[in-house]
Image (tube, rainbow, N blue to C red):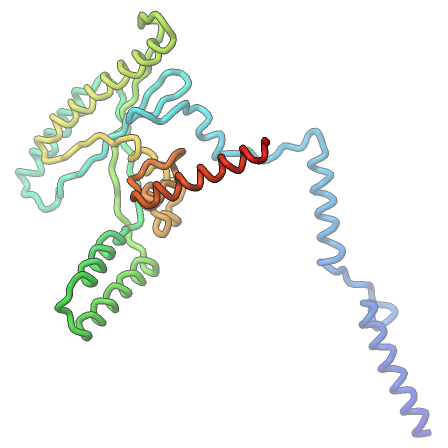
Length: 298
């Protein structure tokens, strides 16, 4: 009797193990569970594939590409559009308004209001919040500390720990800095310009747009200077930097636009100053490649 019970228990264990291995319900009257990894996902892929093959299926729009489809070029310190509209951007360094007295604040308000009242064209205001970048002060501190020969071991260790704390503070506790810009726009009608060639027409269009936009910028600069508000032209590189921080807000803290420019990652050709040794090395590589091409041709 005991042998039969042992054999029955062993048979039950084998039955349960078999059902688990084949992924079937242990009790016959239970329904089979759906495996998400093996059943649902292939079904989703199949449905998605059929939707793409459907002629009525619409993909999501490419917002980033469509955002710049109207821009023709960014040069001559302006953004040019395909309809011959030009945009010039000026950076504004505001006055510390709340540290002024009541009379000074009223004078600033009067000057700003009078400038707005004198406008007969549209002016845009753009505010951009950026993460504060203290990489330049950190680099300057590092260079100064390494160049100092009179630092003892304790002072040098303290300087290194302070620099490391600043780096950790910048990455772990980000702070924001607000940049302020004025946007001036003007559209040129090519039919109003007399030119003998297409190249001359393009040159006159750019010159006329830049002259008009600079007139507006200088008017704002002269008026706002009375309120201790500095207005300066944003050059072509500054426009690229503005767009870079717009679309790479968090990435710009580590991958700075300044580093991209210095490392020539946005240049078509190498334009930075190079050492004579590097120039000679590049020339040797070019000569070796030309010699190899001649040998292959022979």
